[in-house]
Length: 312
Image 1 (cartoon, rainbow, N blue to C red):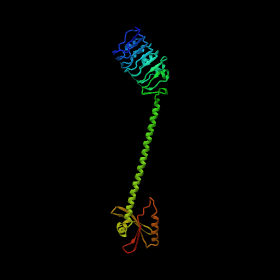
Image 2: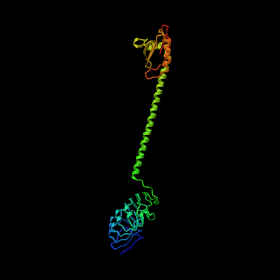
Image 3: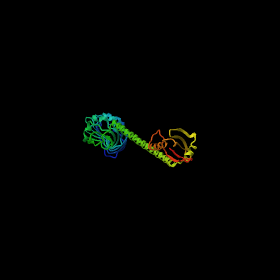
Image 4: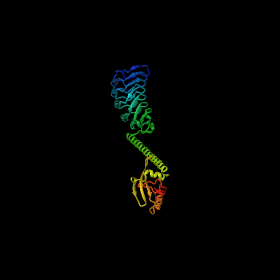
């Protein structure tokens, strides 16, 4: 027996291969055969054509298929095969037509298919193959190679209409660039946030100082002789800080708000004291320096003796 065609029947159940060692042609296509292809297929060493298309065969292609190295036509499409395309097929050097479409083969397309010198038609379409499409051998003939329906497959030949492959280096570079961009944006936003926070704090500080200054101005602008007399304990010697050419300097404390002041009381009996008072008023109201106390106000009044009183 060299030729056996049982195609397009209603055969069901597992595949049982004939024991005829001289079988050249075996066609079991378009039936309801299920299960696995038995390892005994390796006994058909003279087989040239094997067609099991259109069944419900599953599992992986058996490694014993490598013994059928005289195969020229292998059709296994429209089944439930899964796993990668096995290395055992690499022994089929005489293969002319190979059909593995419409199954669930996964993994990359093996490179050994490029080396098949006699391969004229290859159909791997509608599987779960991935990776880069080979470019040599039968893959150079677009009209003889079919790989449609493998969503994760990529390639450099535009005729196959596949997306271009992205190398690992490109992915790594892309990841590095993305990371750099994220870090740059993060620190940029952090810097902007810090600047805004700093400006906000400065604004609050200026506002607080302005409020304090305003409070001081409101409380100091209308100081009377009696008020100055009170905060210095009647110009007590214990409050005396120093004596200058035109007057004495006292410290004082407003107990109501806890504000401490330094006060220069002019001795108007000294020649030039009044002129010095006016000059100090004009100069100090315009001067701003960290080593100089701010002039809060000036007092021009009459003391308890009826004499003229002036103080800064």
